[in-house]
Length: 323
Image (tube, rainbow, N blue to C red):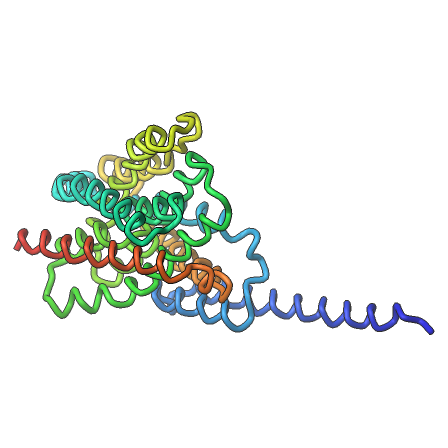
């Protein structure tokens, strides 16, 4: 009796299933490149895909989202003015310094209070304090974090990002926040750059400019926080990753402000940046599988939620002082 025949048939069925999943996934990717797909809807679509068909290219997702986000942010720089960006950066500087220090301190305290594994707790605190997944990716090698610890921290941050992308614009409109106030609030209170830009882009062009500038200025704090981490965990400072793409964002702003000839292509660069951001959010959502969602655990999620509520409410109070 040929026992290999059923195995061959099963393999053919599996291959057809994988091919079908890949085809459906690519159709959704193309849909995210159209003007009909907004950033929040792209994230929601990605979440649906993750739960029902799965991400067929999951092993490439982290690298793809990181690269695509960086390219998209640089593209958005071609739609921004240096003077406005500097003003927004000055407004957010004091808030940034106090919120980062306070969030890290509170995160470490909550980790000890809830008896959460030290590295996991610190990654959640760093991700909340600075710029979500980017901060976690930068801090992880410094503290020699394990894959499980990184996954729990990323899962916590991205779940809260998904919630923020939908509720922040609604709260902003309900409280009649100006675009400047909303942009500042987003940059201070939403963890990941992708969700900050996604929420601000729905609120208005000036909100997008303020939010992007303040968030990227905040991202530069990865360097001093990473240095602090090497001391706290007695690690090697050579493992620090510097976010060089921010320099390209600044160059794009300078070109758009001081080189009139660039205006002929600036619109297209900005459009590419916005489309790339939409696709980035779809890929982030598609990476939040049931396994990721259930791996987070109760205590780390509670820590993340408390940190988020504290920084969101404090930042909201702070931006009201600008009224």
